[in-house]
Length: 338
Image 1 (tube, rainbow, N blue to C red):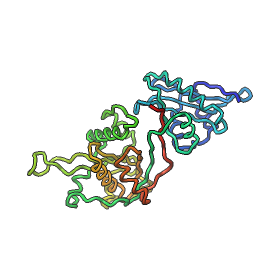
Image 2 (spheres, rainbow, N blue to C red; image 1 turned 45 degrees about the horizontal axis):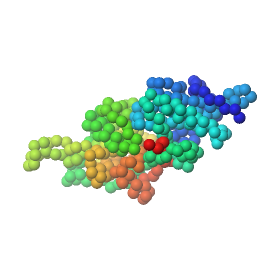
Image 3 (cartoon, one colour; image 1 turned 180 degrees about the horizontal axis):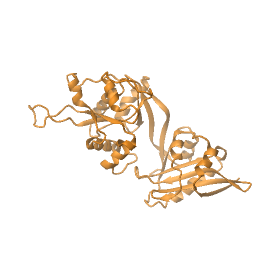
Image 4 (tube, helix red, strand yellow; image 1 turned 60 degrees about the horizontal axis):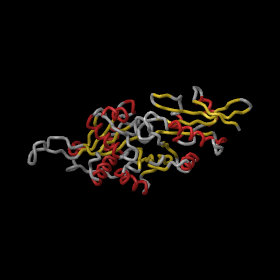
């Protein structure tokens, strides 16, 4: 077997797809989209391994390393090798070459990270290469009615309306809380400085797939002190952003007995979080109440990282009792040591 290495060229994706077949894991499906010609804006280096058979070069493996504007403290890396060429040193050689390229990245960052599924050849390769887990992520589907509906204030519709609100995804208030929450739960891999515009682009505008948002507020506070009727909206404590065909607003209506069934019957994809300024108990209560509302009549799907402590405290008991289930396999983010 004679292996040669070269830069990625247009058409390699089709040639490799014929050799590789369908992606073995969800992580492979996502990372295949990062295989592309090398460039400097954004910085990316992509290398292809070819098996020379009877003078004919056949692409059998590829690796890529690239910078990321979000989570800039590490470089993303990915290597995929045809099943028949594994354990032959091709993957290790590609990794050595990618590390050489990473050492010359314009940012000066050379630490690598990637995503793997536990128990797979990719996970074993990453472990042998010295990459260790820094985070575990699961997709969790919460079944309808898994949590009892909360009672707000005196239990009236008016009291509930004061605390539960459909909020425009363009809201600066919402963007601020979403950005601070995302930063707080990604201390293990800092996202860097998130401006309001960046948060909008990543999580809240139409291109992100956001359909709507529901927020849970603290009870109204008076703008004039004690003894005066409350006049200001309470602070935003928790948020739920919908990315599926059923808008979050429809889920909210369903929670009050007015909504219909999603046309597809599939769970609504939701990003659920809270104001990181809340205490642990306050955060857990806010997340629980909002999850109870949005999952009252229809299932919702959440991405649950181990770093999301309040959400874990609410969801993991539901997993134990069968009121929620993990969808697909777990994902581990693995990284070079600091």
